[in-house]
Image (cartoon, rainbow, N blue to C red; front, side, top):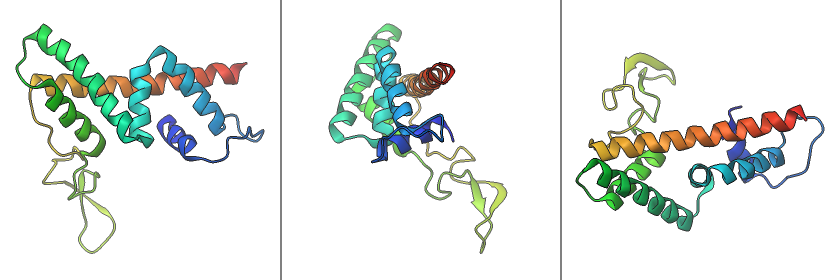
Length: 165
């Protein structure tokens, strides 16, 4: 199970008891995420919103992304509305799945539940809808990808350290 799946499962469980039959219980994952969040609060904030975010958390995250993007836009002399771009990229990262192929990237074989070897005509195999193209959109999308990777990496490292002890 991927760490993102473990985190999502741990966030939604009602049983946070330690279990001797497993080395990584939900409480371990949440504890590791908390420790990782101290080093990279933005990354953990993004993870929290992705896996079970409240509206207030989503708005706070968009505001954080907007500030980060605005400073980059000034530095790079890019034009555009950082708030609008932050909202577009954030919404795309959460809900940008291609509807015709349900995020699979391939067409279904007609009359079966199997996928064909033909790429989806709508998303061309990306499994996502198109994100508006600008330097600011691309930069923020890459920044969000880095945050997700940071959160996963930090939680995995913390869990690995805890399991060695």
